[in-house]
Amino acid sequence: MIQTYDEMRALLLETHYATEEDFAALTEEEKKDSTTCITALYRRQILTPALFGQAMAEHYKTRYVNLNVSPPSREHILMVPEDVAKQFSFVIVFSEDGKLQIATDNPDQEGLTAKLEELFPGNEVTILYTLTEELEDVFIHYRPPLQDRFQSIIEKKESIASGFLSEILEDALSLRASDIHFEPLPSDVLIRLRIDGVLQEAGRISKEHYENMVNRMKVQANLRIDEHKACQDGAIRMTDAKKAYDLRVSIIPTLDGEKVCVRVLAQYIRGISVSSLGLSPENEATLIDAIHKPFGMILVVGPTGSGKSTTLYALLKILHKSDVNITTIEDPVEYKIPGVNQIQVNAETGITFAAGLRSVARQDPDVILVGEIRDEETADIAVNAALTGHLLLSTFHANDAATAIPRVLDMGVEPFLVASSLELIIAQRLVRTICPTCRYSYSATVKDLETLLPEAPQYFSQEDITLYRGKGCESCNNTGFKGRTALFEFIRNTAEMQDLTLHNPSMKEIALLARKQGALSMFEDGLLKVKKGQTTLEELLRVAQPPSTTLTDATPTS
Image (cartoon, rainbow, N blue to C red):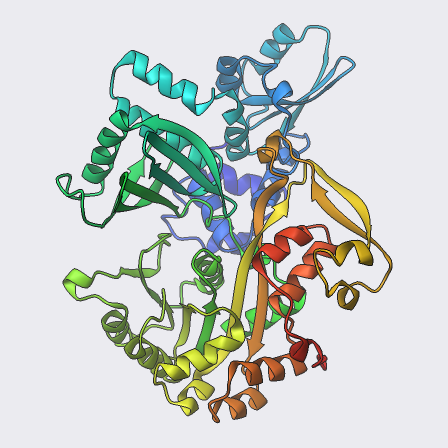
């Protein structure tokens, strides 16, 4: 296994996936070992996990298989005993007519070939390379159902609350859940995981064990265990042998007991880059151009859970360089970025968005990220910071891009300040993407689609249309969807938009002008993803609706 920085550097130079200049830019901390080196190259967008997998495969003189894209079936996984699969870090990805393909993160490991010959005598075995994290994701198939694991913990009669929480959290991390919900019912407690934006039932526990679990979470989050009638919020920092992660805990009293929601923070943002957000080439070029301007304000708008923070972190990855001073003020800090000055909002010590932003502006920053503009004072300071030589990134709660300008004006910021400081408004929503393992195509006519989308004749010119769905498989937990992508709506602050802003325009006036200048609505951006087979029409209509007739009549000029 390659473990040292020097070994990793030699490998990437040999396979031409990085250059001497790339390694010269790394800090001493980033050169500590192969893991920190790869993390740094990811952050600088020199490498992606797929490219790194390819580089490693070339080193081992084999092929790379991405288990996220081509996951093995449960039957193939269970062909190998769990203890053997984990000891030698491998999984079967193909088996037919005496031919086997196995994927491992260490093809040269001692004893692997002998073990394969022992397990599959007479078979022709091909060894492929895969990433460690991809192997860990598929090993979840060895885990018994959650209810069976609960019963096993109860029978052992040791640390039941701790054991339950550990099993639930491990499932949430393996399934890439963003939230864990504990919902008290009259007779028991329902556990649900939010996966790809949709809640899925994970199991149930008795109220007898639930009370101890809540108390344990309260202790870990530094909350009062004797308080059962008030809302409480806290945070837990969890570490294990491989990684550290943060949990945000919210507890509220309900008629049937205390409901707990645990937000899993910063687990899936690390590999995010601007190119992986789902932007069209035109929108990506617009965004890259905006963030390389020396000053101005970029607003990302949308409801809670629409991916705004992920987009901002992706932008910080591009801006994060040794000669750039970046300071953020967030609530909460979702992802710790080495080399970036990050401030956590704390009302008890007087660190609000407004107070923190005022102090940050005196710290000679080049780039400022404000987690959210919530009030007039924060908006006013943010606008002035954007006018005085800073690039300011922030989020804002608005339904669409056109609504953002009137809302900022309603907060009391002068129109000429908004017109002068604003560079770009991005509105976004998240949709689930079709599972690549079970995706299939089907034919439909415009008439068929009119039952779902009465405006279908406006958006589909041909009579016979090819669309896509997921059948549902083990890889996607039989949902037909795996992962999410974003729908975007961009409004650029052109000279015409600045003139309009000076006259305190309505949302409709802004939307009309933006459309005439070539802007697409989130629905139209999503429809392009539907036609490409990335998501379904039903999923698109779940989160976005077609623009009004007034807007669709205003044909874009570009």
